[in-house]
Amino acid sequence: MNINTIVDTEFAGKCFRDICKAPLSAMRGLSKKDAKALNEAFGITTIGELAELKFVKWATAINTLAAEECDTPEQAAKETLLDDAVEMTFPASDPISVDSGITRIEVAPDMVDASTDHQNAKEVQVSTKKGKASASSRS
Image (cartoon, rainbow, N blue to C red):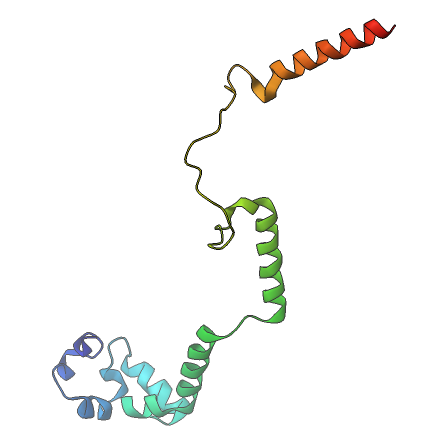
């Protein structure tokens, strides 16, 4: 980060020790009115004092920990239910296990042309005719 982008131009190029001792209004975006309000509320006058303010440290710690926080049991349960629902919808989406025993098929099996024989319709028709012929011969 370029420190000169967050401090006023009169403090650009100064060392960090000097910037730390600078008034709050030296920070870009903090006016003298804002600095006065912080002084009245917390008794601070410099950038260094702002950094050492316990409320700033607490807020920074909470923000850092929030990013690393684990899910609550309720959030974990909802995530598990969602995962299970997706798994039930798309069971074939899981990758095949390396040791599942599946071998590579070198030659594809003979397949019925689905455009002319959808769901083995021809075999069903032949079987139906045989069944009807068998039933009529019995009667």
